Image (tube, rainbow, N blue to C red):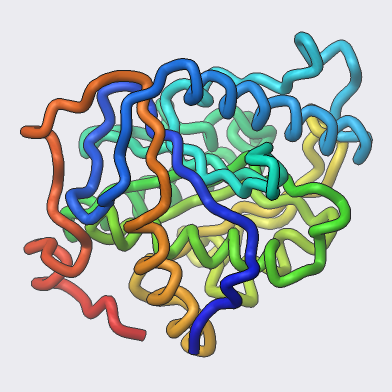
Length: 275
């Protein structure tokens, strides 16, 4: 099965000094273009979140919704025919020695909730330990925003499936996200392969996030274990990602390039990437 060639274009923005998979063939250094796309992404996110009532105008700067992790993250962008950003997802890769306090998860209301904070820490610790045992990256995924006319379309689904494809290009990954119930975002992620966080026989429940004025769920996912019905799409998206523009802020150090997922030694030893 091939994805419709009429789909909107994709683009990747890596953070500074990123380790870029060797499988990506269309990598260029263009600081001005990187900054233009990054700011467009922040404006899109700001307009979408503002319209949803998740933030107020006081949370924006020059119309942009900015978070501290933006500059440290990869961003997968969806571009319209004019080359402007109409969809985005953020991928924050953590180092192998990361602990709970360094994660975005530590900033959620449940992290300070007397009832759930210990369970949450235990659940996230389990996932971090698994990523180290399997020698695969631990990723936090967030910042999903897409123009209203593209919601509930295949374009929206395609962006989420690209999460799995991208993580496989990194050599496999264990992922974590806080997903809003609004617009069925969390249910879409569950349908694709997202799982509840669990620890000590308890499942982390949905919670109300006062910062974004919405109900949220904490989900985990494994790059090698999506819903099988989407496996062909994910493999095709992997092929597409290898040729899309990767716009860097600097000239890359070629010695930092890593091997693609299907050649990752750790991945081959522990699991199959074939759905």
